[in-house]
Length: 391
Ligand code: NZQ
Ligand code: ZN
Image (cartoon, rainbow, N blue to C red; front, side, top):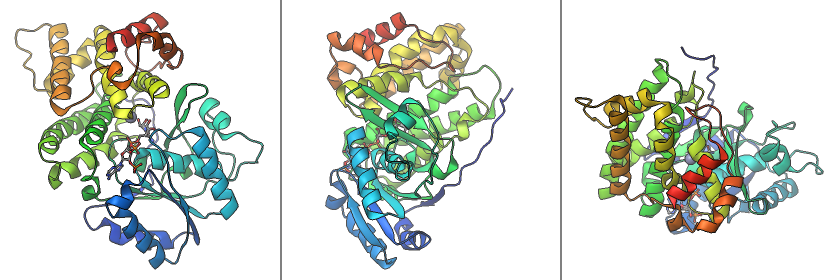
C-alpha cells in the first residue's frame, strides 16, 4: 500500500536545443544583482559562459562572478560564496554547471540571510534544520547530467576536516531552483568518465528508491521504465556521445530519477549513497564512480532480505528469464546483468581505483551514515565487509 505523501515540485524545466533562448525572460522576473556561480572553467571552453553572459546582459543584470566551485563543493568554498552574496546584496543566484554548482548555489541561498553567528554547516548539514531566514532564489543552466539537483531540494556539501560528505534534502520548497535550462547539447563536451559517472548516479538514484517496500507501487513501475530507458540510452551514448536522442533521454531520466516522483509512497533506502559519500569524503573522487564501486557488494549483501524485488528487477529491468530459476537465482542473475552493463559502459568497479586503501576502511566506516528505509539496516561489521569487498 502506498504510504502517505505530498508531491510538490515547482521547478520550471526548459528543455531542448532552444532552451537558452528563454533564459533572459526567466531572469527578468528577479532582482537586479545576480551571483553567477560556475566551476573550474569548462563553460568558458565550450562557449556556454558567453551565452549566459549575453542573456544576463539582455536582462539588464549586474553580474557578480563566483567561479571555482569544485566537484564535491566544500564548506570553505560555501562560506566564501555566502560572503560574496552578503557583500553584494545579491537578488538571485544563477548556477551554470553540474550538481556541484547547483548544490553550492542552494547552500549559499539558504545561508545568506542567516544571522552572522550561525554556522551554516552545523545548522544544515549536521543538525538538518530548515532555513529560518529568507532563501535567495536560485536558477540553473545544467551542463552535467546525473544528480537531479536541477529539479530537487537537495544540497550535498563536503567537510574535509570532519571527513563527512553530507546531503541535506530541504523540506522548504523555496530551495527548489526556480527554473532549469536543459539543453542536451551542452553535455557533449563532458569527458566520457563524467558522462558514465552521471549515468550510474542516475541508475543508483532509481535503485535507492526502488529497493524498498514489498507492496504493489506505481512508483516502482515508473522506476522500471526509467531504468530501461536509461540502460538503452547509455549504450548508445557510450558509443556515440553526440547522439542527441540518447543524450536527451539520459538528461530527462536524470531529472525524473531524483525529483521525488519515484519516491512517492515509498520508504526508500539511500545506503549506497551513504557508503559512496564516505568514499567521497576520504578520496574526493567523482560522485557517481564512488557509488559504482560500492553498489554491487552492498546489493549482494542485502539481496537475501529483499529477494522478491531483486527477482522482479531481473525480469522487468534486465529481461532475465525466470524459467528454471529459484527466486534467489533470478535475483542474483539481475545483479549479474547490472554488473555486466556497468563494465560495458565503463564504470569504476573498486574503491582502490578511486584512491582508497585497506588502512582507510575503519575511517570509511566511521564516515558512513546508516539508513533505515531499505531491506536491511547495516551493522558496523557489514559496512566494513562491504568496503573490504569493494577494494
Ligand atoms: O568545474 P568544471 O570546469 O565546470 O568541470 C566540471 C567538473 O569537473 C565538469 N563539467 C561539467 N559540465 C561539463 C564539464 N566538463 C565539460 N563539459 C561540460 N559540459 O564535470 C565535472 C563534474 O561536475 P560536478 O558538478 O561535480 O558533477 P555532478 O553533476 O555529478 O555533481 C556532483 C555533486 O553533486 C552531489 C554529489 O555528491 C557531488 O557533490 N549530489 C547532489 C545531489 C542532489 N542535489 O540531489 C544528489 C546526488 O546523489 C549527489 O550526491
Ligand atoms: Zn547520487
